[in-house]
Length: 165
Image (cartoon, rainbow, N blue to C red; front, side):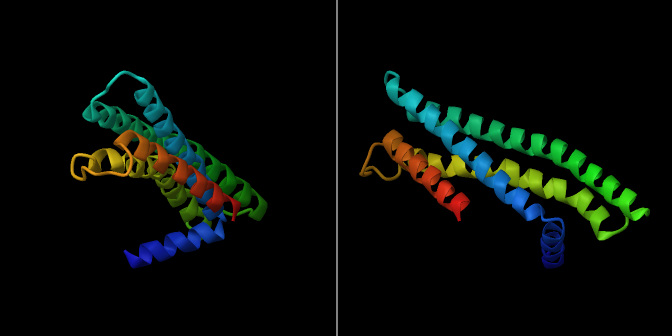
């Protein structure tokens, strides 16, 4: 496992794909946070709504965002990496399928797709924590929807700070 992580790290650095993965994490993280924020605001302004309904709806959307992120990133990155490999092969006048660049063209779309899909799912799940914790921790500082709303705003701010570094 450690050798696989070391190889993936090396391939990400070799192809500078770590920059793409970082960008995808932030962009789809924003998508997840803003989508949860929108759902929470919608539920907040609605008539009384039961917490399990809010959690179920938000969880369904979080899973859909994750699946969408994985599939869209894999399709686009696999095509892009194949194109980059073909261009490099053409410039070097050799077959690079068995080289590090060839391995990167096969493995990195999976890694980038995972990052792209896990970001909105993980961030959405973090935002939902106050809703899950509400029945367990009765005296919350804010009601569950408001707590999740504030947490979403904090996460959006932190993603902006991370992107700005």
